[in-house]
Length: 368
Image (tube, rainbow, N blue to C red; front, side, top):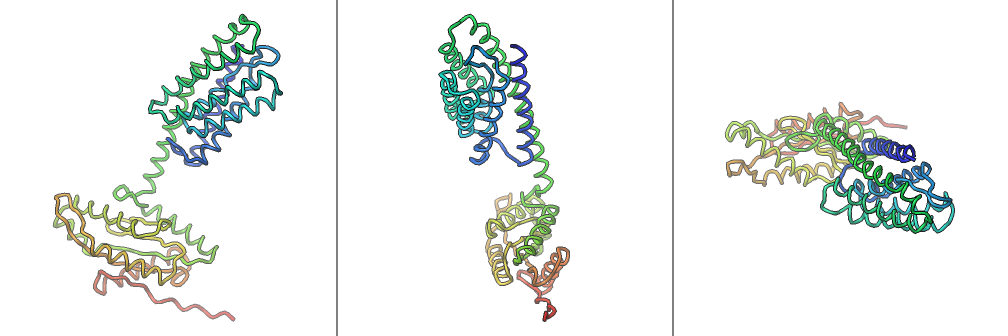
């Protein structure tokens, strides 16, 4: 009997590690995952609990004892109310399908559904996760005890099993908590490292490394779907003067605000990055020459009119120059694409700054 409950705990811990690997692979974040994640997670934990039923201890011919309710508890605390309800329903249905219809199966299904529904409250209660696990686990153990009493004729047989089940369930719930917290913190650290590797620390925009990856990816997509792709190379005019006049903290404040301004004037699908110093870039997806130039001009005017707040309470104004390149009008590959945008930016700088420039289209060979 002890070995059966011990196997239940080992199986559940194994499932927790598998879930952690899935969460890391698909970058699932806590708390409150999306409804889609809760739906899939609920089905997954329902299967986990069903596996635990295969390692159950028979109390009599129709009644089995195991720790499947811990799957519902874990789903509620770490995924959400929807996941808890789905896990409970899956366990209820599969209990009947696997062991046949009986009063014990119906009662067990009712209890699992009830525990799943209670998970909606526990999922969104303003308690610590450990408190939620302990409280919901105790509720589940109590409900299970009531059902076991209704489905057994021998209290002696029940009391030989139930104290051990209650003890292992309680200890197992706490053990699962520490395992889940360890997995969650490890995944969070990995997400943070990945974000830092691809994000500019000052503006929270994509950095140069991430921009180059995005550029290659979007160019390939533009080739595959025969779409236009535009690139805006942006540089702040005379930015050194801001640093020299107001200090580097003021320069950082200007860069942050400019990054936010660029995001606000780009479309949600466009990719905005800071490529170093006062250099920024925007990838305009599925965007041709005319629309790209119009977008660049809109951004230039917005920056020209904007009053940048400085740390000392003063404001300053500045301008930007923008170079525009369009695939496939100006280039074929990613290196040439960025070079064409940079050449257009250089032209904007050399012809007076505070302007948008785009190179003339390249001449393409005629096809017969």
